[in-house]
Amino acid sequence: MSSSRRNFLQKLGIGAASVSVSTTALAGATPKNKAPKAPANDGQLLFVGDNVAIANTEYGKVRGFILRGVYQYLGIPYGADTSGKNRFMPPQKPAPWSDVKPALWWGNTAPQIMEKRYANVYASFVDHWNYDDVSEDCLKINVWTPAVDKQKRPVVVWLHGGGFTNGNGIEQDGYHGENLARLGNLVFCSLNHRLGPLGYTDLKAAGGHPASGNVGNLDMVAALEWVKNNIANFGGDPNNVTIIGQSGGGAKVTTLMNMPSAKGLFHKAVALSGSSLAGVNQEYAEKLGKKVVEEAGLKPGEIDKLQQIPWREYIDIANRAVDKMADEAKKLNLVRGGYSPVSDGNYLDNGPFFADKNHFSADTPLMISSTFHEFRPNRTDATLESVTLDEVKEKIKPRFGDKSAEIVAAFAKNFPKARPVEIWALILSNRKNAIATADAKASQQKAPVYLAWFGWQPPLFDGRMRAFHCDDICFWFYNTDLMLTHTGGGARPRALSAKMANSFINFAKTGNPNGGGLPNWKPYSTQYGETMVLDDVPVLVNDPDREARKSLA
Image (cartoon, rainbow, N blue to C red):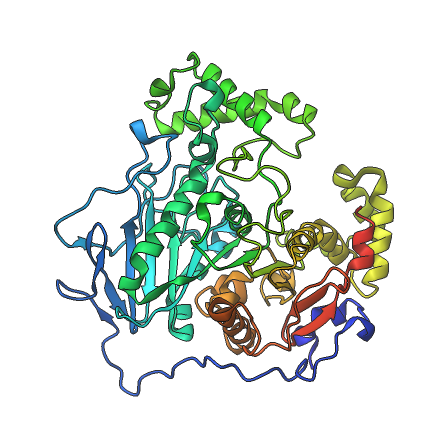
């Protein structure tokens, strides 16, 4: 086996003792859901017209299109415009329509700072950002389905990344649902919702609505309610819904699992490269809301005037308020301040997530995954490939302080064959939060937790990209040949993607990923730390970085 195809875990020096016994570890199992063969004839691929792909919703009919045999509906309203009197308020239902509404193009991106979004040419090239119009009329959902019938297919709902501040439902080409819908005979949805200060400014103490600090998440609840009420019209099963998100989207998954209003709206969950175990401190959020009103030159209770400020100007006001609240954030021992869901004990549970064994989400299976090199410092700087361990100790000091030398030594011992630059990336990308989430969910003892670690390295930028943040998304969605700037394309990434996508499809169908082509995937336990390492040769291992993580405590 060439070094480019060697399992990265083995390359770093993890011994065989940590590998769980699995007769299919090297060969893998035969995937159940095989990709359909291309048609023998070279016929028409796109169908669009007045009487093509018509579907019903509770608000009116929509017209989509059929591409390569998959029905696609883009930008369907699931909520009303959030501007003006609807700003900072729970989402309202969209107005019904009488004509057939065209659903042929993406809905508007939620308000966010767009200046210089494409300034970094490397990021723009690699992630191939997709942004169109930006406005507060952004509560839109996209649907991909193999057929508009009554088959009751499993439903997947994608929650985009970007923290709670940036992004949209089709930000990267790898987010598209066409290939997964076809491969798994399922219905795939993605959506936009309010972000940043417009989605998470808690104005309750300043005279605003009690839900104002969580309206961005309430948008997602409204989208899931739309799925419950409408997805059967698109060939989906409202009683078999899986939510999945990456990075900030992973945190959206875990917060939705702890929102009372989301009860019964989803049945399985997947958090990729991100999760949260608590919302924002309510005291801080309410003080920040009052500071926003003050920064806007208004008095408490003048929320109607705050609703009329142009959204771009409002974001600047809100961000200045965050800067002025920096000392308050330090007093409350907050890692960071800003705008994200607020633990108010009403719209979002207060206290640690997953602490209640009788919680409504306790019986929801959860899959958690992260990548080996979420944060790698050297994609665009080849000189860092020759960094020394002593230099790594100095470079991580701003984050880890006096423990830097101990941490570097622990990771170097745990991964004896890793190069210093790889040690650096592994430290910055440590699995501490992923493990904490897995432990918390497993402690409920009601539903399985499946843990993965993605180590596949793309042959791009002279091999410096490694298994980076976002690289795994297109593998789960069978889009490696669509997201070429993350994979290079071709047979090698496609082979792993088939196993990952089919395993995810099985999880969405049954809550168990096994049978999709990966080795036998045992549920996670705190004792053994069962982890599926995803690489050219996938393998199940027992907590491969446990000793290294101990140094982070």
